[in-house]
Image 1 (tube, rainbow, N blue to C red):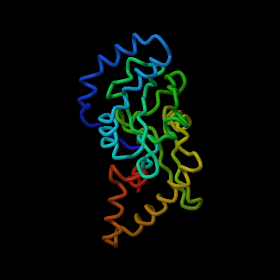
Image 2: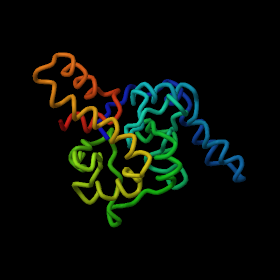
Image 3: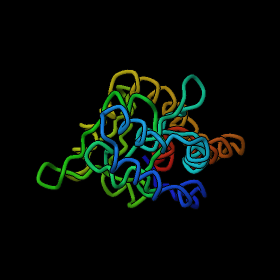
Image 4: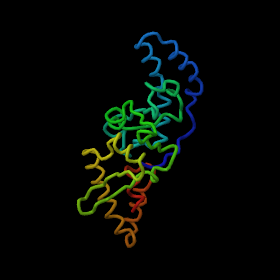
Length: 207
């Protein structure tokens, strides 16, 4: 996870938020409420979030657009915080696994080790250790604070498939870091691996 500076709010949110919220408040059945809450999926919102997060999951830093579609994630779940359903600051871009498979409607409060680390509101590096074990060849995300530990647990940031793919890429980054001092091309590739749009950039930046 890296710090993300989101872009300006999409015009459709500014223009339609009050109307959409009004529809949520007067919804009289579960079906009409679901339909009203789903307005955040507008294409302008999706496009703006994908650009802001460089096509990467806000939480695990995996690329979202190669083999699947990214999800619009509500940092504060819309089921518990419907008034925040259309707040630009509450919307993140994530992979389906982090959003639906892991976080879902969870939002741990301070008493439970939360809230989850928000990459748009704080520096993730203050809450995590991005550890590369060269012997085991494993790239793990560990909590450096209680909130970091809670975030790792809720989002399952060391789930097997994610850790396997992340470790494969971080192994290459580690090799580049050893070569960068003497090889301009290795240095260039290492700088690319640190970029905001590069998967698992948090690990590259530690090297």
